[in-house]
Amino acid sequence: MTLSTYTKEFSYNLKLAYPIILGMLGHTVVGIVDNIMVGKLGPTELAAVSLGNSFVFIAMSLGIGFSTAITPLVAEADGKGNVEKGRSAFHHGLYLCTILGVFLFTIIYFSKPLIAFMGQPGHVVELAKPYLDIVAFSLIPLIMFQAYKQFADGMSETKYSMWATILANVVNVVLNYLLIYGIWFFPKLGIVGAAIGTIASRFVMLGYMHYMMNLKKKFHPYFKGFSLKEIKREVNIKIIKLGSPSAMQMFFEVALFTGAIWLSGNLGTTSQAANQIALSLASFTFMFAMGLSVAAMIRVGNQKGLEDYKKLRLVAFSIFLLAIFLEIIFATFFVLFHEKLPGLFVDLNNLEDLTKNTEVVAIAAQLLLVAAVFQISDGIQVVVLGALRGLQDVKIPMYITFIAYWVIGFPISIYLGLYTSLAASGIWIGLLAGLSVAAILLYIRFNYLTKKLILQK
Image (cartoon, rainbow, N blue to C red; front, side):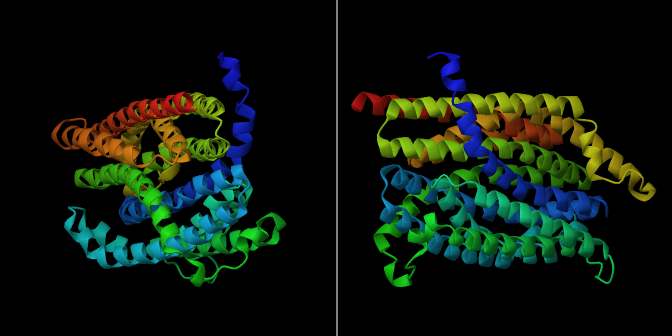
C-alpha cells in the first residue's frame, strides 16, 4: 500500500476524532485553568493543587480506563446492527461505573492522611487536604459521565461529550474566578474555590449529557427499561474482564506521571510547581492523541464486527500515521516556545515570589524540551492501545505497560532525578524511556494479532 492509501483515511479519522479531542481537551483545560488561576496565588498553592490532583488523577485513571470497555462492545454491536447488545453494554456499564465512582471517592477520602508521609513540604500538605476532599467527590459524576460518553462514542456519536465539556469549562472558569479571588460578594476561598468550581462543572457535564442524549430518537431504544432487575451477573463479569485490564493500563501510565509529581516534591516546591506546569502543557497536546486513540477503538471495533480485517489494519495504520504527524508538530512547538510557555502559569510581577517563580519557569523550560521528544512515543503508544482495545485485547497490553512504565521507566526516573545533577529533567527522561518501550512493544503486539486474524479468515 502507498502512503496515499493511508492519508485518504485522514479526513474521516479527523471527522470522528475532533469532537473527542475537543471533549478531552475540555477535561485538560479544567486542570490548566485551575493551575493558571491558582498559580497567581503563589508557588505553594500551585504545588498543593498538584499534590491533591495527583491522588485524584490515579483514581480518575482507573475510572476512565474501566469505562473504555463500553466503547468496543457498543461499536461491535453497532457494526452488527444489534441494538439489544448495545443497550445491554450501556446499562451494565453505567451501573458498574456508578459503583466504581463511589468506591474510588471512598478510598481517596480515607487514604488522605497518607499524604503526610510522602516527604512533601508540610505547608503544601495542609493546603492540599481540603482541596482533595472536594475534588475527590467529583469523581462520582465524572465516572458516570464517562459511561455515557463511551456509549455515545461507540455509536460514533462523538459530539455530545464535546459540548458537555465545553459547557463544563465555562462553569468552571466562572466559578473559579468568583471563588478563588473573592470577586463581588463571593468569599475568597483560594484553592478550595478551584475545587468547588471543578465539582460543580462535573455535575453540569453529567446532567447535560443525559438530557441531550435522551432527546435524540436514535438513543431511545438504548435508554428504555433501565432497571436493577435486568442487571445480569454474566454481562457484568464480561465488562469487568474487559474493563479491569484497561483500567490498569491507564493506571500504570497515570501513576507513572504521578510518581514524577511525588519525586519532584522531594526535590522542593519549585521543582514540583515546574513539573505541574510542564505536565499541564504535555497533557494538553496528549489529548489529541487520546482522541485519535478513541477513534481507533471505534473504527477497529466496527471492522471487527464486520470481520473485515484487512480494512481494520488499514484504518488503524492510518490513525497511527496521523498521530505521528500531529505529535511531531507539537514537539516542534514545545522546542520553539519552551522558554515562553511556563511564564503563563506564574506571576513574574510578584516581587515577593519573584526568585521562586523565576526558578519555576527555568526548570519547566528544561522539562518541556524532554516533553517535546516523548510527545511522539506517547502518541504512538496511546493510539496503538486504542486499536488493541477495539480488538478487545487488553490483558497482554496491561502486562506490557506495567513492564515499560514501572520496570523500566520509573527506576530510571528515580536514579536520574534523585541521584544525579539532572534532577527534574532526569525524572522526565525516565518517563521518555518508559513511553518509548511501551510504544514499540504495543505496536509489535497489534501487528502480530491483525496479521494472525487475516491469515485465519
